[in-house]
Length: 198
Image (cartoon, rainbow, N blue to C red; front, side, top):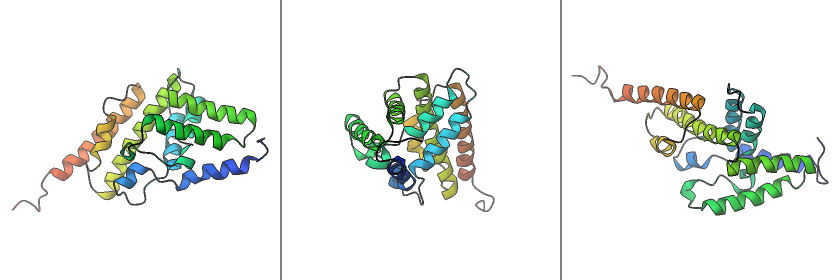
């Protein structure tokens, strides 16, 4: 675990901030106790671990999932509703990744920064798979919040924003399962119960 002159500790303390950065999309929807960025990245890493696709480098997918939102420990979770351009968001996150990895040994700095770039530029099959995992995890979380709140269908805009964006067969199947289960919940609440019938 060799690191640069500042050592590993400052890096780990900064990354630790991700435990306390709430996911902005949920904050804007008034979700009680919204998940943190690290909560989101952890389940994404588990999803990557669960892939059966032998054409993908599973280890690389897990690493990409762990790094893809790392810059948010410095810049926060910038959501589409924040009206920050893609270029500006990229610029802020790039500067954050350079600041974040500055303390690390040259090899580790290079590895983490290059993983972040690979995801940002969607330059490999693994990066594209992890991008789909990112959006799949989001709608799974939306479904869980609807269940917790007992408000089926309330977070429809998250589903609308990801429509047509899934192509990997495993993720398409998972998304289909989430949507089927969600639709059943929505249908069940829209039916009148026996107590409603006079």
